[in-house]
Length: 331
Length: 291
Ligand SMILES: Nc1ncnc2c1ncn2[C@@H]1O[C@H](COP(=O)(O)OP(=O)(O)OP(=O)(O)O)[C@@H](O)[C@H]1O
Ligand SMILES: [Mg+2]
Image (cartoon, rainbow over all chains, first blue to last red):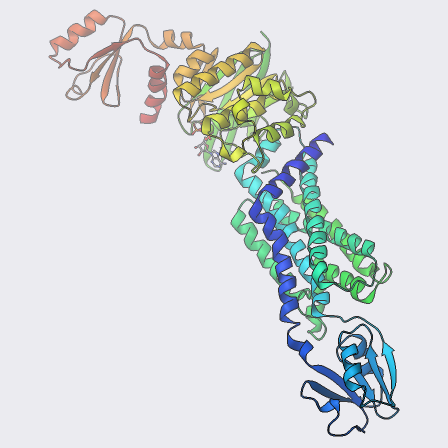
């Protein structure tokens, strides 16, 4: 145990003092999330979108015809436009058939629209809905954090062990009574602590400005994150088992991480992509992390709903660890 | 004296290269054993097989009469010819980490004192000079109060002052009755430190004895050294061309000088000296290199 904590300490210090890597691990995802939130939240706010059902009974001069208002017509089934109000995708719905209009009381636009439309809509009945918006960032943040986890786990353990093998640190370890199991698991634990803390830090840091939607339990979110980190580190260990060349290792790692990032649905939804691609993505740990954490955050999923993801992640971890330990050589 | 370590007909091949080709010797407990030989002779390969780092192609390694086992690594200290140290951590942190690996480690203060690490104790491993690094690596090797230390070229690249300091360190370790096995290219070092010297080349053992015995067996008398230009036609007994010089080993200096004079050899640049291990090394390995 003493050996174990000593190695964990040394490795963690190595990470913290390697300022370049440290800031990269922390700042890169924050910049991505914040950058995307600006890019996709542009000037939508300056224009109001108002859904309309039925023929307008208002005159030419009514507020509906102001230049900054966009009208969208819906048929008499209110289901769809009401959901859009809840998600903040439209700001108001006016039903001329039954003389009601709907506003979302959590939307900034509601108060303004109420005042602007007061005169024109006299005699209409107001109904209030609630619901916070799903913005692209809400959907993106698990993806970006997952991607960062994948890089950090693969390169922080797998790649570093290859470097240790190449420069002789592993050989020096072999000359001590430390067993490979102790050494490798200490590397894993150190990286686990680093990755879970950076992930939490990135999340809470960006959450301060962006106020993500989290409908499910934070505890479950941390659990899924932890399991995914262990799974990704184990995956990286397979590369570390034998390889001696840093260039080859980083090449191979990039070769597998890039498809994972593109096809795990970090930046765009896999819905509507070819079936084959969706099925292939089920072999990537990242896909399961992203699916599960989006389900928890956006749909408020509980452990039962994400159980399939948890089982797959656990199974993969086991397979990766066994493969890596069968293949592993100090030199 | 008890034998602490013994190797029997040790061989290691890399494809066609016979890095070590059948070597046997034993090392008495508490002694200092020097393994010498030119570059590529097979010293590192031999010492690493003894450390249990490399597995031999054939042959046996015994530590205290038994094959090396799991406990072996707790009892020995190892310093490789080249070792990378974990980056971004200090000398102190490195020592502490390695201390945690052993059941009864030396105290930090003791290591600092023995290896004179006070000045560099808080320095990052990457920022050590060659000499500081060697002291630190020796510090790592002596952590477990080893029964035996393996030092592969511990003084290569050190300045003469640092080398002498290093010899003092090794003397201290020897004073604790620790057995030392070291490889070196410096004959003077071997002569000062080692009780026994093995000279090897091309994976084979050429000689093994105490420094004094080696000299008396191979040299009786003195060496006469003359620039060899214009001398090559002459045929002297016990002579060899070494570099630009002809070296004549003789136990009758009077006669040799007369012969040279009679042959009307230009005596400019002539040196007469007592043979030392350098001469022996050149004689043994130089001869084999030429052949
Ligand atoms: N891993 C290896 N693969 C192939 N050949 C090797 C390997 N290691 C050593 N050799 C060869 O074995 C021979 C002995 O090498 P070794 O390192 O033991 O020499 P050495 O006596 O320690 O030399 P030096 O004084 O330069 O350190 C050399 O010819 C070397 O090229
Ligand atoms: Mg060597």
